[in-house]
Length: 128
Image 1: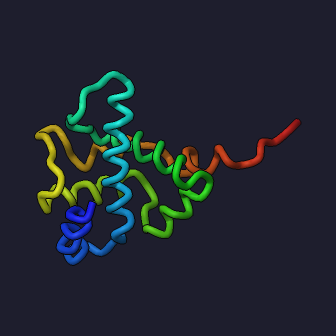
Image 2: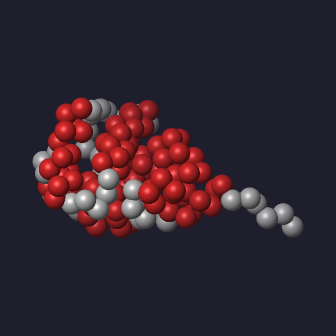
């Protein structure tokens, strides 16, 4: 992780929209996603698609942050799945992560609504 952390310096110098912690979380979520795929019968290591990574991000965020996930993401200036795509492609463009010819920022537009995923499950249910 230290090498990854050091590799972020030029990325953050070029694009300061998201803090270092957001990039570290995405890296951790990538590892988490690969572990989830192996548990589902996949092989490791393998390429992870944008949608698979978003699933892993959701799972890890709920496990790590619970009802505070959306608050943490707000602090990191991440408000939608496309923001995670920006982080991923900043890493790709700085040759920290790789992509296939089929991968694009557009993959992250088909993600989920943050309110539905990170806030609604923790709201009190209305009893009739």
